[in-house]
Image 1 (cartoon, rainbow, N blue to C red):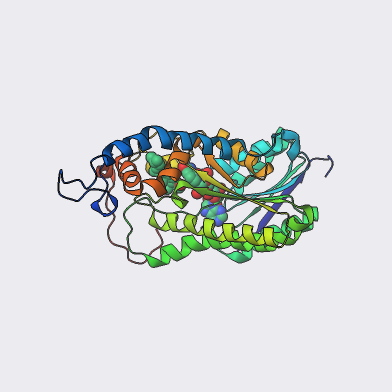
Image 2 (image 1 turned 135 degrees about the vertical axis):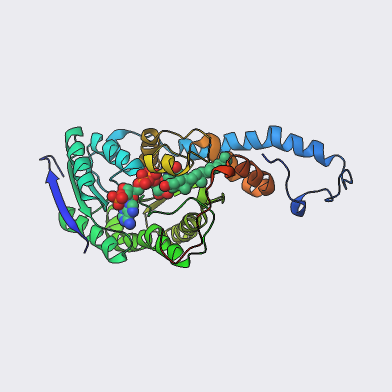
Length: 342
Ligand SMILES: NC(=O)C1=CN([C@@H]2O[C@H](COP(=O)(O)OP(=O)(O)OC[C@H]3O[C@@H](n4cnc5c(N)ncnc54)[C@H](OP(=O)(O)O)[C@@H]3O)[C@@H](O)[C@H]2O)C=CC1
Ligand SMILES: CC(C)CCC[C@@H](C)[C@H]1CC[C@H]2[C@@H]3C(=O)C=C4C[C@@H](O)CC[C@]4(C)[C@H]3CC[C@]12C
């Protein structure tokens, strides 16, 4: 059913600002405040401390250790999943320009063929694709096997694909949740397990593309958000174990805000009026953070870092801010689920 293989090679070396009463310092009744200076303190916190902390963290996460040089990717063997469109496609082009060997995967063969052709034009050391669906962990393993057969090793595994998920009120469809967990989470685990022997050998890198939705929940993304939260739990635990066992394989978790890919803009632009960040720059930042073996990337840092910080300091304030950025009146309620995936 899956795995159609195609390759090509170039001969080169291998605001709602009100929180709920639950967490506030004041009682729910108006003007009965247990601590009159709390308002002032909160003001100072919001105006000075959080931006300062945000700046510090942005510098920490964004710049990372060492300097990035595009030569770092020359001749490196890289798998990119979800590479037929969006951010994955842009990552393939950057890697090609940097002279890497790329193995691309997604379901749509015709799109992958075009991306492979463009990669070869841009200067990839080699470019090929395997098409199939990540709903099946057998396919995920097959992609890694292909890298082993073709290159005999692997330097970087970029896990980026996502399956379709509706942007709407949760419709109660448990089968859909299972399906997106399989596509967006389990296949990432399966690819990591299969690729680990090669990555240990090369002291390589795993790059996991996640989202603000994997740190802070927003409405209309319940199944998707669950898959992204799962990624952080799994890969952060694995990072500990690598350190305990002296496994020199880096894990970079990429926390992305709204990016201007066709699918994302189509899905949410009628509801979210925030301007999306450019996919080309986003793709380059992901590669950079992986090459520098950073723990985490926040892109764009200007919105992601404050959101991640506020999550623990002022969760109700953040939730209100997130809801105020959604034009809920533009959400068309779907009829209750009949058990179908979409
Ligand atoms: N765009 C955004 O606003 C944001 C994106 N992100 C993350 O960035 C990453 C890329 O997102 P983006 O570029 O927008 O996504 P796109 O929808 O543009 O691309 C998704 C890719 O995954 C592939 N894909 C879809 N279904 C399957 C499947 N069942 N099996 C294998 N491959 C599949 C698609 O190709 P095909 O259909 O041919 O299979 C495509 O190549 C994702 O991890 C996403 O969560 C995070 C935050 C925000
Ligand atoms: C500080 C706040 C203003 C930030 C709120 C940002 C919210 C609204 C942003 C951050 C991450 C974004 C989602 C995302 O990760 C990926 C996808 C997949 C795509 O195919 C469809 C759109 C979707 C669901 C995005 C929807 C908008 C999200 C929730």
